[in-house]
Amino acid sequence: MTDTVVLPRIKRRRSKVQGWGVFAVEPINKNKRIIQYDGELITHKQSLPREDRYLRRGEIWCFTVNRRWVRDATKGGNIARFINHACKPNCYAQIVGHIIWIRAARNIEAGEELNYNYHTDGEAAMPCRCRPGCKNKL
Ligand SMILES: [Zn+2]
Image (tube, rainbow, N blue to C red; front, side, top):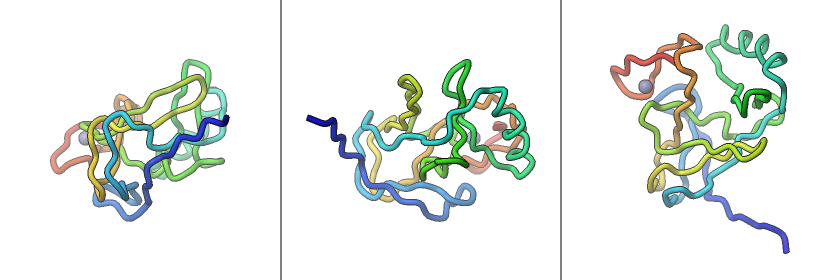
């Protein structure tokens, strides 16, 4: 028997935070798997020049998997790439081997924008727009 996990329905639309966002179409229970962050699996060494290039456009597409690997969502990415950062998010990332799962950090209502903490620790030096007046940097 194959492992068929039914994932909640989500959709991409314009975000109030920035650019595109991803929204719940139906209620999502706390800790439920929502989507995998897909993208090309590359090394940090390969990722660094790409990250610099994306950052110059004010974009973050590379997700650190572990000390060796990064996923670049510009290649083979899905709509998880459009989930915005928030300092107090309603989702979190769970890494299982080379798979990045985005899961619900609490019960989420239909229509809510999804977000998780990118944990970039200010490396990108971009202002956080997760809420009015947020002083943090991405
Ligand atoms: Zn913030």
